[in-house]
Length: 117
Image 1 (spheres, rainbow, N blue to C red):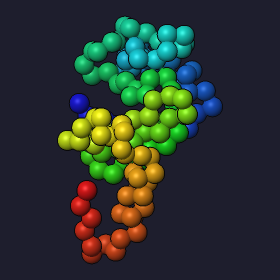
Image 2: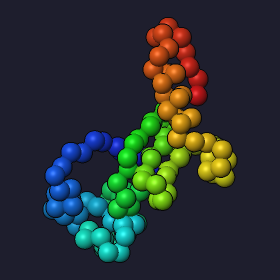
Image 3: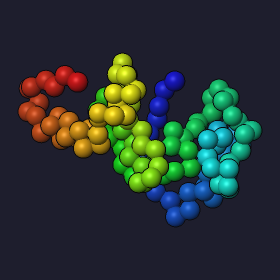
């Protein structure tokens, strides 16, 4: 499974996504009360789905392939991914601030130095 993340600016994202939802989106993980919720494309191949469901992420920190964090509003589930790391460790020991610190460190390194994650 591959991921794609892109910035989207919209005055009304739900209206714009409604036009493509039936053909391209799996919205089965949205809240049942959400206007785009549908099980029509649930788990179908070649359909895009939102990792955070109908909750809009506040911040994305991508460190490398299969190592990223999606920060969501307080009281909802945030997503920390690091391939090869135990999920319990990621959930209990790794924080948003640590992801940001690594990103800042990597961006401030001279280009002739390597940073291995």
